[in-house]
Image (cartoon, rainbow, N blue to C red):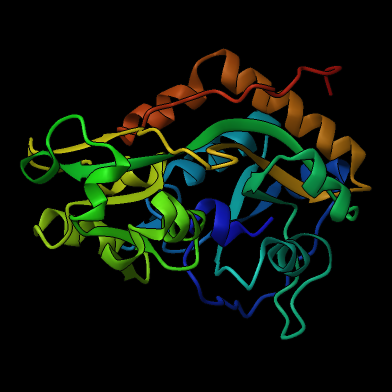
Amino acid sequence: MNMRVLASVALGLSLITSSLSAAGLDDIKNKGVLSVSLYKDFPPYSYVAEGKQAGIDVDIANALAAKLGVSSQIRFVGADENVEDDLRNNVWKGHYLGGGVTDVMLHMPVDNAFSEKVDKVKFVAPYQLEQVAFAFDTNKVGKQPTLANFMSDPIGVEIDTLSDLYLLEAMQGQISKNIRHFDNLTKASAALKAGEVAGIMGPRGELEGLLTERPDNIQVQSLVTPGLARSNWAMGIALKADNEELAKAVNTSMAELAKDGTVKKIFEQYKVTYTPPAAPPEVTAKN
């Protein structure tokens, strides 16, 4: 499972001069800090606004740390070739150029088949169900378009993502000639608002976050996607597989944050639809 295929995160590598190392629950509480890896340049989840870290995952990381009774230390990282590389670089081993690892990493796919492939990592506390959606210009394709509209109207997509791969094959390949590729959904969203494309396809959370300020003629919604084997996936938290006590504490804390409405409120603050995962985090024994 490739994170670029599933979640369309930005490319690049971010290095920091200080070295971090994953810690057990007791060590985290003793030093009073939970270290967290988040993807950089990834609105509305994690990005820099007016010189400060911002985004849904930033707020969730801060809330999680507070629930554990510590402060958060967040570092923004770039996406490597695939999510296995990201997990190796940031969760269980560290990048060969240095930088160390952090205690947890957010916005990770919670998937049984994928978990079996990366046995050095444990995935816990799914907190969101992300899903494929479309943003489109109703002046160009109407208020109830179908994929067939994009056989004649241009559609934007982030290159090398699930949406890109799907559109290349959809409608027997008849959409492929109208695909406009972009480095990221930020640029694709700008092209949509500028009228350069009739629609864009990508994860709903990203589309809603990027198009918070949009004219009335641009809508975000799901469309029927025949042949798309998977249109949604749960996002959760990754940590080292042998860090059992921290895994239990994270699961318990996230369950409490979901139950008291904190997680939903964070999504709403960024005007992103909150869809809880099919398997929410579970409350375990109190720490």
